[in-house]
Every structure is written in C-alpha cells, then in structure tokens.
Length: 183
Image (cartoon, rainbow, N blue to C red; front, side, top):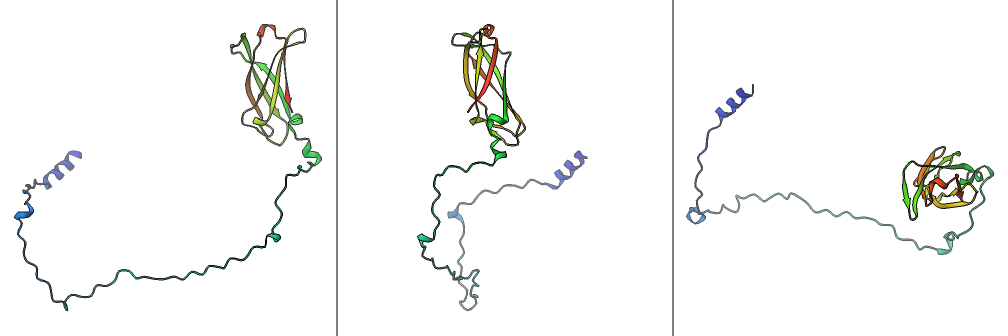
C-alpha cells in the first residue's frame, strides 16, 4: 500500500527548472499613467472614531468620626468548657522508642529515638508548635541525656505524627526512655 502511494505521488511531480534572478537595474520599467481623477472611487473608511462618555460618581467626603475604631490587642476570650479541653496536653499522647540505626554523637555512640504522637481529639495541631523533651535514664534513675524536639507539619485530628531525635549517650547504659510534652 505504501509503495503504491509513493508511486502515485512521484508520478505527479515534475522537476521545475530554476530561473536566474534578474538584477533590479536590468528590469524594464514601464511608464504608468494615472487614471482620471473622476474615475477613481472615493475609498470607504474601514473604521470610524467613536466617543463613549463615561459617567463616574463623585467621591463623597469621608467622615472619619463615623468609621469604627481600629481593633486593639485584647486578650482572647476564654474558650467554652468543651473546647478548652482540646489542648495539646490533654489531646496528645507521646511515646519514644529506640530506632535500630547506629548513630554517633560528640562523645561516641548515641541513641536515635522515634518519637510518636497520637491525637485523640477532633482538632488538628501544628507540629511546629508542639515541642517535646526526651530523657534517657540509667538503671539508678538519674538522667544520662536529654533533648528537645518538635514535630514537622500538622498533627491531624484523630491522627498521628512521628519524628526522629538523637540523644548523645551510650545506648548500653540506658535503662529506659521518657518523653513529655513541653508547654
């Protein structure tokens, strides 16, 4: 099919010999005689000018005494009882568990913790404003290391969020990890 189409297209085309260009000096210029002025019709305008008057309302004088006063920085009103219970301390639970990744701090081996929070309320919280503090305690109960962190993004309503944090302490000396929200 393609061969038949190529043959048909090839038969219809004939080479056209090219002519040499004639320089402008060698061209013959015939004299043009102007036509009689009465024989030339008057050109019809293709456009017309229009003027559209636009009425603008007059500006009224503003009485500044009639304007409301600018808002002032007043303390926010107290929330209703049921909304006041939806704050991070009551809605969020946090826990920390060591990650299996080996990390090293300034003084040698360190611990990387995965800190998780669960939102038990119908309100989302900004992770950038939700701070926590993690403690690594030794078997005697004293604190080996601590660090403060925050969550990235948003902690969705009825959802959860997770972040990583490193503690600069020897993981073999840690008895337990404790995490709490920082108000």
